[in-house]
Amino acid sequence: MGVLREELRRNLMNAGAVLVGYASLAGNEKLPYPALTQAVSYAVRLEPADDSVWAYARAYFEAGDKIELLAEHVKACLRRYGFSGEVMPKAYMDGETPVTEFPDQTAAAAAGLAERNGDGLATAPELGINVRFGTVFTDATWKRSEEA
Image (cartoon, rainbow, N blue to C red; front, side, top):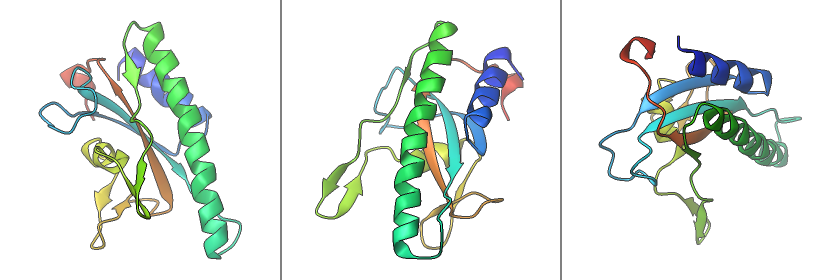
């Protein structure tokens, strides 16, 4: 594994990520930054205090805060190596539904971290649906031998 990828993985796992993967998203017409065709995808575990809806909602928003912090770690690491890194703009609300042009789950699936279940939810094979994904789009290039 390349030095950059290993440093990114180590930094993310030490800061609270439970999964880290890399993907090429070249050719996807919904990329928010067409020049940034590579992705660093990561997940954090939802840790609700109990089985109530409110506990899951709180865990979801806490995971969102952690996702944003992890994105800053990724972008700082990429900058040290001379690469760019950007995250998706915040989702906007259409009625009661958050909408993004390029969901983090799409990058997670491309990176091999998740797959869609029968309900259309992204599930991590080892962790189920109790994760939240984050993505940093970058121009870093991964050597073919580094993929996986």
